[in-house]
Image (cartoon, rainbow, N blue to C red):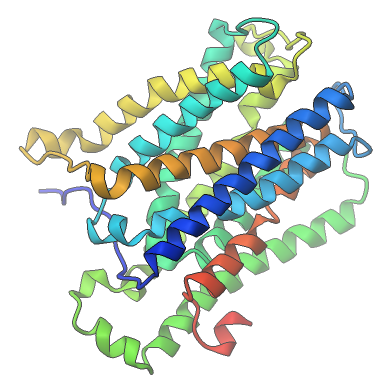
Length: 373
């Protein structure tokens, strides 16, 4: 029969007091960035462009900066030792993650976007469900990819694919103007090259590790627990994630601009579209998460194998991961509304620098000068 759903794990050695201090610091920085975005919009509001981009609007670039840090840091608790030692399944971790994301989305809306009342229609809920499907599947792939190839390499791969995908959506589907086609083409080629090099760095690092004492320790582990044995699968998960992640702002853009095919009218409220869309996002997650969980675990449960939720080990890391991502997504929505799919959301993916630094300097995943270079 089919194997039961499970996650690949590593056995990192982290100072837990430092680890939770770092987690708290990331939460505070994310919260400050979200508050700054909200306050700046209230004090110096600029109407979003209709069917175009406005690179002169500071709020768009503030959103980019907030998303860069939040997206670059959101996955650090996926590598919490308690989560890895419990061999927490990716979909179980996603349950905690989804609960926090939906709850915080509603809280942000209540604080900053509820003055006009609830903007919640059948059309907006459909778009929320679409976004939730893309997001939930993407984040399950993210958990698996991070466990397989690490927090330095996996985001570098999926971010490169994300930028190319988001750019394609902006040009092909939404008609966003490209002022410098040759420069854009060169940038995309460089992004693809970066994805390839990121994958190679994991292979080079594994080879370097095999010449150190770490390799001797890995020899004591079952073959399936070695990170190098799952490199190809991790790379595939990261590439698939990039396709979903690059499409994740499409539902919110359709909410703002309308979608005649489904009879969805363009959003016309006074509150910004990113704020007005948050209840629909939360509703979409509440619908999609149980369905995907049942599809994922259903076959195993019918055979009598039930998921272990590892509440003590995984709940807090999962909840915090959800809050991190939610705050990054909030900032990214502002970036997309003002700067578009071709500039705004791709710009937020500079977060690969932040995630790479976490992986190299904090988790020490990449070994050897050649792999880091």
